[in-house]
Length: 290
Image 1 (cartoon, rainbow, N blue to C red):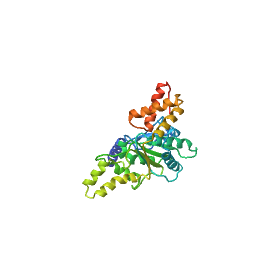
Image 2: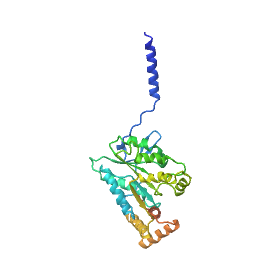
Image 3: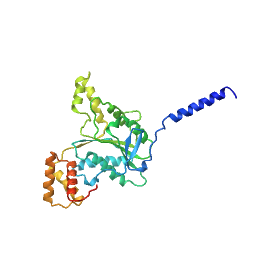
Image 4: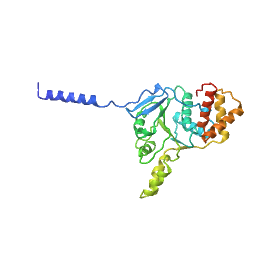
């Protein structure tokens, strides 16, 4: 036996041990398992969602213009045409996240068998820094994806917005062609006003500091604003829900109760209308399922 042979065997055993210790390469899951997934940065995993909590598109009232804008943009994307990242911003409880989920459901169910599947991927606000890894896994898939972040905003010393900017428009790789990013926020520029004012007052060049933060929302080609609904729009939501779920109640009583419900909460919105309908259905002994 030569001197080199034991040494070579030792190197091979060391190499095999190192290979066993190394983490397995991340790979995209079988996206045919579900229509929606939740991104988990721990282990770079996509957790399938058995049942998406959403309301049918036809039940969303008082947001017709917003619905048509997002629906048209998503249809173009699903058909392989150019489409924009979308920021849905504005009043709380007016159906921003509900619209994203409803539009995905409507378009996904209307796709032809020979079209690429349209999947919904939810990423939590606190996991935004891991978005580049998420998109890296989606890039190689044959499916198309809506990556959705609900209630996106940034505060204080949070710098993860910089990685989001690069991923959306501007990095070397950029956003994959089979991915579009939708986000909802109560803030149009995703930053609280006092944070932007603080940047302006402490920076050497105040305008540049503010522009860096405002430019994040510029990465969204489609801005869809949501505003507080009127009393008539609120009542239309309530009536639509009641009719859809077959809740039998006198129209005058329905109106009076719905207005009182909104008054006790100090606001009118789609969320408040839905909460009233759940209360009404419970009192009538009815089960409702969107």
